[in-house]
Image 1 (tube, helix red, strand yellow):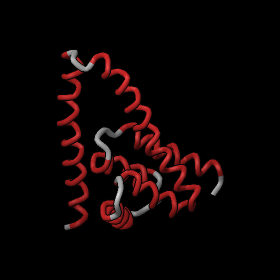
Image 2: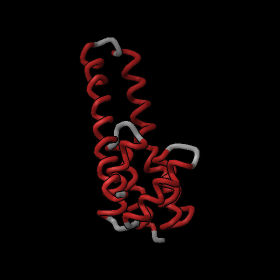
Image 3: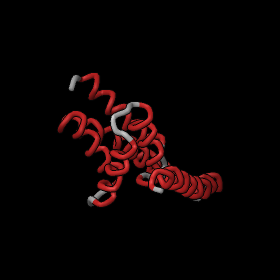
Image 4: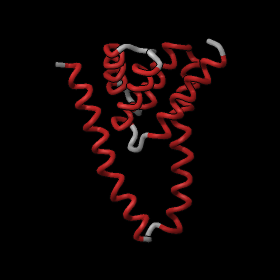
Length: 137
């Protein structure tokens, strides 16, 4: 696989890692849209099989799916590209939040943001389950 294609894998998982809050199940909808609908790297059945494998294997679902797709499309270089793309946003965001929270965790605005994030993650999970359930029955 050429460097351009590896970069595409990296950017795809960077987008997935950046724009999903809550990880794992919350990112299934975006993974499906990017991997199946937009890029056509997997079909619906392969996607469902990959997600079953990602859930059954030890570790994070996002990283497991990145490993599966990266290896399937580009071998170990693809694994590195996908996994780095998937985890880099989280690492940077957690570091930034940790530095911020140390100083401002008791502010009402900060507490309000965290109260809003919880229901948003639940909504993302429910939407994904409903979408995937349509293909099972």
